[in-house]
Image 1 (spheres, helix red, strand yellow):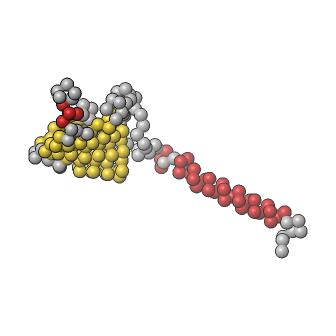
Image 2: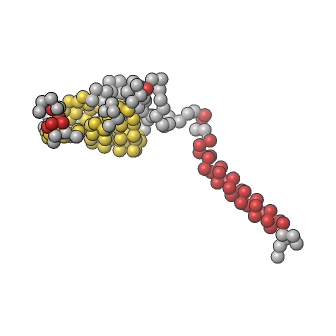
Image 3: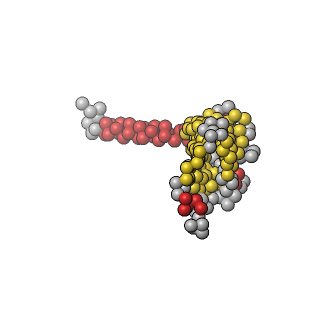
Length: 186
């Protein structure tokens, strides 16, 4: 039944078949990484790359072209020294124009200088002004910290200074008065 008496051709064809399968799987797995985008241009949806200064990374260089949207976008926010200041997690992000990005189901976590979570901010819909870096929402939003919860109908939040302004039906619940007032006021 063998094509030759020694059986060498059967062994050789098995080796060639195995080698072709391995090379084909290697080509398929690395093909998209080696392929260049159409027209030889770089993709606009690349990951967030560091800019000239660490303070410019994150919220000002959102890798999203005008008119496009991204689901599950996570953006780090770094200060001028390169320390993580906050993290933006958006269910959906859409670039409105060169200066504004609209977020849906946005969850922001700010961090202390010791890199511990500080504030948790939840916004259903919001718009980030890339020039002023002010995030505003005209829907009910929640801000939480270990010692309080605060809710308001609309909010304007500055991630740089971690300050905000809540307007309309504001409700604050203080859960840990000693932590809020500090040790010297007890």
